Length: 481
Image (cartoon, rainbow, N blue to C red; front, side, top):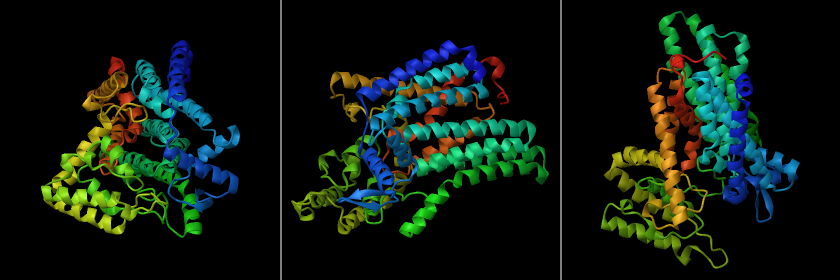
């Protein structure tokens, strides 16, 4: 990569400046400091000021395990250097990190395809508004995408050497780099572990199978086993202090974070969550219904027709909503809307009836639609456009933004899919496909189909799209590192 940078210095400088300008526009005009950002910031400041990894509750700092320490640790470092609660500095640092991701994407494209593909991938990444938008959000996405891309870069370099040279001990550093990068992903968000499953699965299912078919002796599999062991060990190693902390201070074995990012004194609402999954398809319903519970009233008029199977079920659902919204559960001094155990049980009964009536809808069709929505909807959730873009009743400028972002996202995804299919024989493509499949299947199980959850896959989308510009001489195998 350094040789390519020297060779095309003007091109990469121009692309970097264009990418920087795009990201600074988002930082200046659309900075996203959302509720999750403030929670991360609160943990970071308590960690700095009191040495306690906890949240502020009624003026007191309470220990928490609801969020992994990766992003609060990043915020604490920024706040310690640039000032207390300085989220602007956070966004500017993330801008630099996101530009570094563009160079990693270019490096992978160069190794797998050609220098021409590397230049295309760099420009597609630098000018991608979806990546740029999240660099201006105080959320985990930018760092998660960077470390995911770094892990893939290390993995592909290690796989190329393993394929041609076996595995000399000097390559252990590549696999350790891959593992530590995955560990950083996991410390940011628990679903970072999907990348560990993808790398391990590729080593055993694809790469290992090919080698063992050619060399049947067990000795030939040892380099693969060593690579997998190094990746697994180094990925899990950063979680050990967090796990021990939770055991010592909270007396809970929790190596990651709870499924619903809740502390022990917060309700989980299993019945309501299961009922949501019997009908939710898109991000608009996440904003209008799911995020309101608990804490805010629900507008039953926002429920789609698919949330009822019969008139009696409709009446029962609306009655549960009325009870949730009623003053019986909320005092004037404490207007928080809570999901009581009785109400949650009512939603659980509704969910069970709907699942029994249509199991394929629950287990297959709705997850597939949620996956499609996360991949294909306009990525404007951090911007002013109405999430119900298909109703075309938004202000004309923002409606135009929704349509443009939707078409642009569709172009990226289609180009990436064509690239993956056309060059499926390229060494390493199976790793990309496995990661995309595992992550998409996991996302289909969530109650909240948010488009941002597919952004970790966008470097692969960009690399595969850039493959459409591959040179004819590079269509079989990647170059060695």
